[in-house]
Image 1 (cartoon, rainbow, N blue to C red):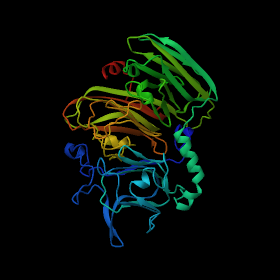
Image 2: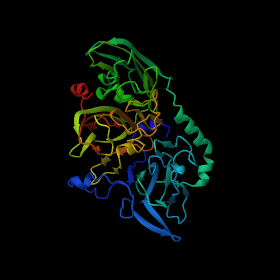
Image 3: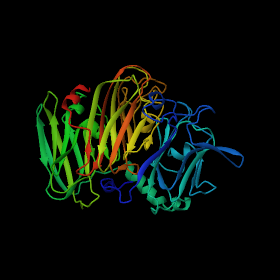
Image 4: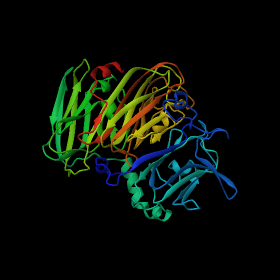
Length: 502
């Protein structure tokens, strides 16, 4: 989980990321536009069946939410509060591994997974009105998850390994033996450090309007291990959309992304702390993605604004041993303004062709109305499959929170955050708990570690545009992935789009 080098290589033990969720079972095919965009992604009475089945154990009902036969590992769980204010539940979640008749792990459905119970923060945490866990639960043969009360919304994301892969099944004995390691991982995730060992290359200059300035990194096989960028000022919040970060590795441009979307800040300077990226209050934006190359690398800053900008760019390059699984870091941007909310539609983040690993994204939207905009489900298709590996339950659920109409507040976690929402960020927190307003800008971001998404031939990530209002929104997203030199995307540099997507 805390080895960034591993994320930069295609997994030695290949797997596919899958998900069980309470998505509406009427969603069968994009050809059926009504069923495909059905928004009833929960279970609120006995007629709803957005789960697998109901079983009876010892005379008591259990709702089955996941039933995977094969080798795998749970790597992310998400469950929301049943209402905006109801934190408590009596439902017991039970995790049965390898066909056992008794659960290997069980506990209160929310407390077990929100960082207040057995699994410590930040491996599990209480997000905005949600319980989210990234604690890995591996199994050699099968995994069945049940709850003792009718489920509401849910997501269980897991790795599916090829048959025969050697995986040691989770046990409570091993959990207790790993206490010190778990503590060390938690401390590392909360306080990530930027690498200082290596060769430092800096740029500190004024970049004029429509000008580009570059630095060349040491030649030979190496990897960028730390990168930071700081502007002279952020008084114009749109400056984070107008300054573009560009990178070339071995002669190919793999990164073209506005800095706000690259570092997760969105529009303006919105501080937050993540595992891969930090946006500091002093204006320093830093990232810890490992970016390998074989021969050469160049990093550039392009100023698309109408004003000169003071830029300070720092990089640290260290050793890397290139092999057949090494990949290039990529980041791209897509923006659209306007984005009509009717008819309902899927908005494509990115489509990739070739081999690679998808590792994260940052979505910034402009909502012109007060009603909630984020009901749309993520749909992620891998390697030409007939139905998405990942079919979610809402944009806010994908980014790790819930009840979006009331959750207009800052939150941060090593793997996801809401750096800005409505008018609130880390420096301006929400004080009126019951306030409902999502009008204006919002930025959500999610990065991946154990829940990275490998693909051998293709990956397509779509997000439903699903607002409660018929209106025109604006969307902008930064997407991050690793890929081979021959891996391609449908994203190209879009200077015109950057300037029109505000």
